[in-house]
Image (cartoon, rainbow, N blue to C red):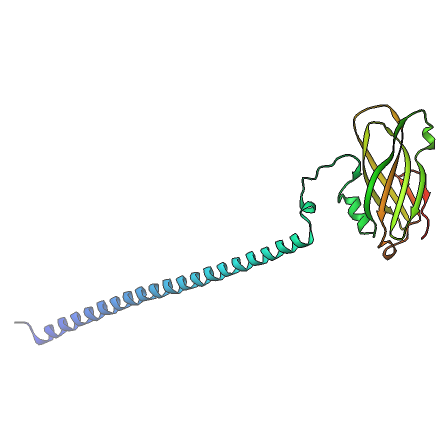
Length: 216
């Protein structure tokens, strides 16, 4: 027959085991709930981040559309086209020299041959030769005779050198014929010239020969 003390000790042991198991289970359940709560919070955070990102993308698209509309309204499509085809005698459009020229208040209008190349004997030291330089209220027109190949066309540029000299630049291209002399006419819009400087001299391809630009 078991003594009351032994029964009491065994009962207390079972009670302790039950309480331990119950405590362990409670801890496991709490951990489970913690992980579920964390998962829910992370999901909500990701959802909010996704919604914020989607909203930001929409705003960027609207801003991009606004910029595109502004460019389309301010810049003709011909200026945005990189496939510019050069033909004949003309100014180079928006080269680095020409952009610098515009930034100095001088805008190119036209470059053309006004006297076709004539094959003849010539004194090389006598060229280039400025034939005429004249102003109107808003334009500067320069006629210059040069030595060139009779089958060539010309690509023109210009730049302001220092504070008072306009240097004309041309590049010949085309077929190959005999050499002679021809006359080019450079025409510029000088409406904004006085806002930057007043040009006094003109050279061509950096030559030592200088022409004098008249005042208004």
